[in-house]
Amino acid sequence: MSCQFSPNKTITAELQWWQVSDTLAQNRTCPSSSLRPDVGGALLPWIFTVLQIIIHLPVIIARVARWEDVQTLSIVLAIFNVAIVAQGYTSTNMAPEHVLVWSPMTLVIDAGAMLQLVVLVRAVHPNWLRDLRGVFGHPQAPQEEPAQLQPLVPGQAQGPNAGPNPLAHKSHPLFVAFVIITSSLLFLAIFALQVAGLIASFRQPSEPILASWCSAMFGYFGVAELDLNCNFHPVVRNVRNGIGCIDLPGTRQRTWLMVTKITLILAVCIEGIDAFILSFVSLQRSWWIVQLKRPWFTMIFGLTMLVLILVVGTMDAYSLPPGISEKIWLVVDTGTAPFVCTAHLPPAGLRGQLIGWLDGLLASWNATYNGS
Image 1: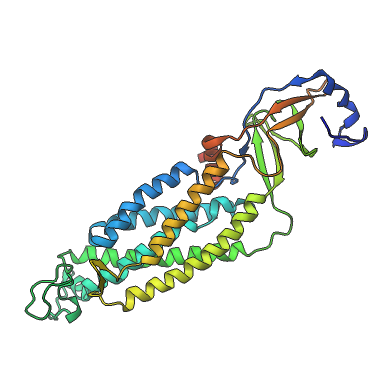
Image 2: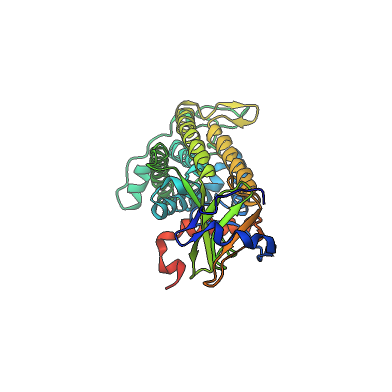
């Protein structure tokens, strides 16, 4: 060891360096164990992000070509993601040190999907309220469909004698009302969650952000960890879970707070652009065979966010956090003679990421999640 400490250097309240320094010559080895993030210290696990991309990619393609076939699926995906973000807000209280769990960056795709449903379903069914009242015994006089709802296929004849509108498919008025109302409420919920996340990301913590990292090795009577950078980190043991934890600088958290600020500002602006496109671009407007009345920017930006989360999450899962080295020394105090042993501290991989993220996401469930 190249670190030079004063014999009176305090390791813990009851232990000083001179009490253990002589044991370094014994070259003791401790059982190695991986280092994983503590509660709320992990980004969305990469396997979940892969599943999100696998599900969203074909839905995005369908929303471009045949959006009417994925209305229900789009709503279900939005409900799921809104529930996950809302649960993260509740469990973490949107604390800066837990931003990796509560950051609402995954909602961009769903915001665009709900905008698309609200605008296009109303465009295809402009008299949906009249039709809904008719279901409940209040028939209204029939009204002609707006001229813009005539055939939308490029190259097909238009006008009053052009035939039925291929997009004005027959849907039950109750289903049409369900889609319009539900998608409107979901978009408002998504927008509110994004604004709340943006406000929280700008809050300045009163103290430097620290991140807790845990290992089963630290629970083995460990009282302090010493890394190659000559930094001591006191160990807080969690007897119930059989682990011990140390505090490290919250470098990843600070970085992700900045990323959250930037992406949410961009997301709100992009959603406004797509809302303008959906509201004012004609249904007949197309480029080549592609309809332009689609939320293109939120689809592309939202998918980019998922890829970013996947890349960063994978890197985080298989690397140690800044501020600690893989080779460490552990100060052990069994109650008799304290000693120092060497150990290797590899990253915890996917398992550690799953534990850290789920522990943070479901913390508010208390005994339901942790047991009694």
